Image 1: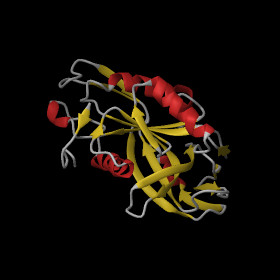
Image 2: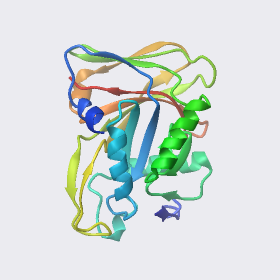
Image 3: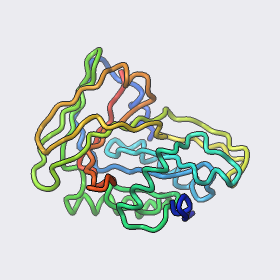
Image 4: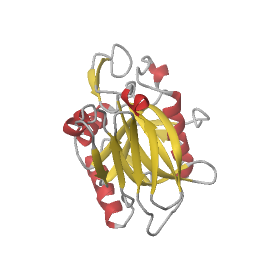
Length: 249
C-alpha cells in the first residue's frame, strides 16, 4: 500500500524476555540483523506483515522493531500505536534510499535495504545476503546493568564507517487491539515491539566505548533496544552497524 505526496510525498520467546530479566545481567549481542517494520492498523495490506513480524520478534538473533505510521488514519481508523516521529523516520529512510514515496508494509533491513514486510522470502533473503556481504552487524554491543544504571559497551569498528549515533529505541509490551473501523474493521490484532520513542544517547567514533543510562529511564518503558547507526551528512539514517536489546530487570 503506497503513500505519496508532500505528506502525500511528504517474537515470542525473545519478545517476552525483553520484559523480564534476572538480577545483574550482562550479555553480548551480535545478532543476524535489524528489521524495522513500518506498518499501520489502517492498512489492509499490513496484517500478513504484522503476523510475520511476530515470528521475527520471537527469534533470538533478530532485533525486530515495529513503527506504526499515521498517514493512513484518514481511511477511517486512527492507529492507536502510531506516532508522528515514526512517520518522520520512514520519510528519512525514503530520502536516504532515494525513493519517491513511502509504503506499508515496508521492512527496512539493517538500515541498508527495504523490501515488502509481508514477504518472508524477501526479508529472510535480504538478511542472509547482507550477512554474506559483510553488511550485517559487525560491531559487538554488550549490555550490562546494576540496580541503578545500564551500561552499553560498544566494540571497535574494524573496517568501514567509524562514526555512528548510539540510538535507544523504546517499544511497548505486546498489545491486542480490536480495530473497529477502517480497512481492517472487525479484526483483532496483537502487535509486538511497537516503537514508542527514540533518543540518541551519544556518538561513537569507531573505538570501544561505554555509555550509561539511568535504570529509572529504562524501567518505565515496555522494552528497548540500542542501535549503532551511521547518519548521513543531511541527517538521514544510514547503515546499522550493531544492535542489542536492553533487557529490563
